[in-house]
Image 1 (cartoon, rainbow over the protein chains, first blue to last red):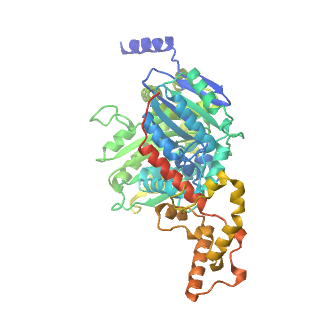
Image 2 (tube, helix red, strand yellow):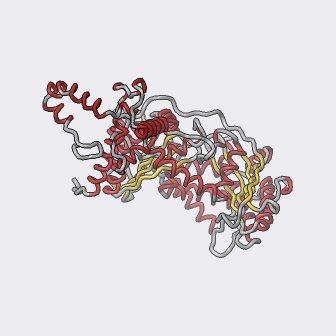
Image 3 (spheres, rainbow over the protein chains, first blue to last red):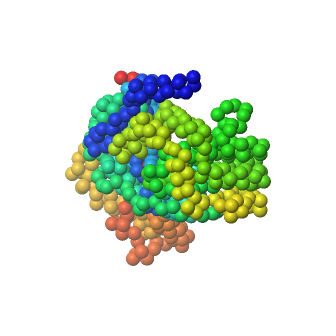
Length: 434
Length: 128
């Protein structure tokens, strides 16, 4: 009965092809719009200017916080007040590979917001006094918040250990490197080249967005130049341990165990492996049946979650463990390592569950705006948006053999282990059997 | 702007009205500068802007470190000369070509920012 239902469902899903997004080009900028009839529109400018490509440590972070400041077209005050009058929201976000400038607003106001974005890209003044008065305090606040969060720290350090430079660059500017407005300006002039920029809209059709982009970006706004590129990513791995002052910090002791892969073909298998390990409960009040969830359930307040962070030429796969006490973290981490080692032989039932879960995750990410922009934005930049069918197809190809092969390839590398907490208690990588 | 941190001046109006008259008054203006004697104390004109105003304070904060250092140095020199009740030796006087308005543009910028803020605080909005 159940299998029949599933079969019917998948037949229906294939029959109605999901119209998603098609990429076109307007005045040298790649554009894609996704209209599901929602009442608001959002426009994101995706720039290949993440921390991976930065010329000085922290300059990408500074550029993110320099968004929507004084431009030749108007002051930061004008931008803010007029956006408020339109009822819009402006934000900027930084990932390791991309910088996102977002505007959300009511339908019909896209001309104003796109010309605003265009002036931000082409004519931000990067004045030294704004840098000192407005940008540096926000950078400091961001970095301080990151420092006081063990999980953010653990992920940042894990990237540095795993990839060293490029992808390993910290997302946060550190107080140890000097930055000036001039550095940021220089980086922006390189990063904001047209070939480096894409516009993705939700709640707006590709045609309408194309027209608006041509109008706003038409006046030879952004400078030419080549797109950002860095050396190919290599995986290194290593171990780092940080003390956590439990009285000062709000965070809990944390351990992160990760493996890296620089094989792009392994990405779907890694996404499935993540769901084999699991860690999240699918039902309320019960821990679930995934190995990590069972491990975490033994320690009150403990959590263990598998993660996979895909990048353009590498992925970081691993387990994130946290508990109220370092002893708890130690106990869960031991079980988590056993679970990770078990990935070599995945049974058929676990595979089926994980594949279904992965497909659901991929599909539900596309459903909300933030997830959609984060997923599709980089794809627009590279020229084509992958359809859900393609993603599903790649996931469904996973077999017990392909998973064990992917897992073996992962385990060949040196593990990346980050421990944040009471260092007299938290185990070393070799004590965990890694 | 007649009333502002930059003290009363009709020079822009006069320049617009009659450039010839403006130029003919220039020697008189130079005499006035010489008579006021601030260059002989080692100061530039912009060192004399009213510091007690918030906008000028902000402009001072926006000087580059080198400009701020030089400004402090000139003011200290002038205070020392004031205590001694005598001008600097002639070779240390600020030359007319050195007496540039290094802070006036910053003050104008801040004035414009304040005016813009006032405009947006009192703006009437119409949706087209």
